[in-house]
Image 1: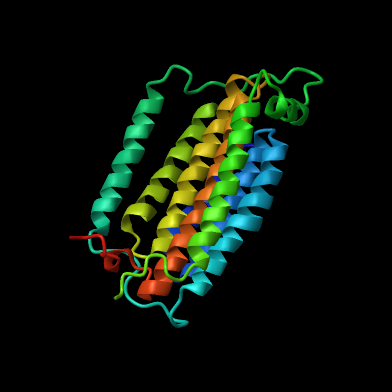
Image 2: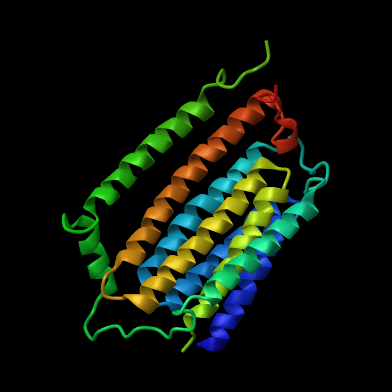
Length: 172
Length: 102
């Protein structure tokens, strides 16, 4: 279990570094698939099987593929031009290292930091509980419906923005 | 058994790498890739808290599913905007998209 976690963590972090550093965007998108798959393995390690499946289907199957399509639609030519990082990239590096240090300091001062996992009761089915929580009026039916309305609105907006060639045209 | 802290440190590291990508990359699509990494770090935290603190109430997983929906919407709208900008300006480099600079 520990070995599996460590291997997965190394894969996730290495893939994430490649996502932000690789100059070829198609490679970056494929490294993102690797990182997302590592996160799915983490969900399986955390006994959240449904989340692992959803991660693979939605993130890898839809979002990462959408990224690859967008990269291919927006390349002027097959080679990439210019540097991948902007001039002040070291400021960003310092900022992200400071963020990591701050988060680690904050978390280590929390009393539940080194907590071991709680016991799942015998006969408890997380998928059933999740499904009931998502449609029960006592639980999360309202956020669930709001999320579906938001998805519809976002997709209609995305189609409108990407389809209408006059939107955002600043050339006179 | 793995203590909760390992998951928290891993997700903090993933969040920081994503933050670096958002701040340092020039290509708008690469910035969106960084945002995806950050959202995934948040999701690892939510599921780990669900498993370690309160597995009977399913709140953490419900939150993570809402984050999935938000991420899907964000990617759809963001990539549509990038494609629209590319169609009009023939570039997706964030430095060159200065039409709102006065």
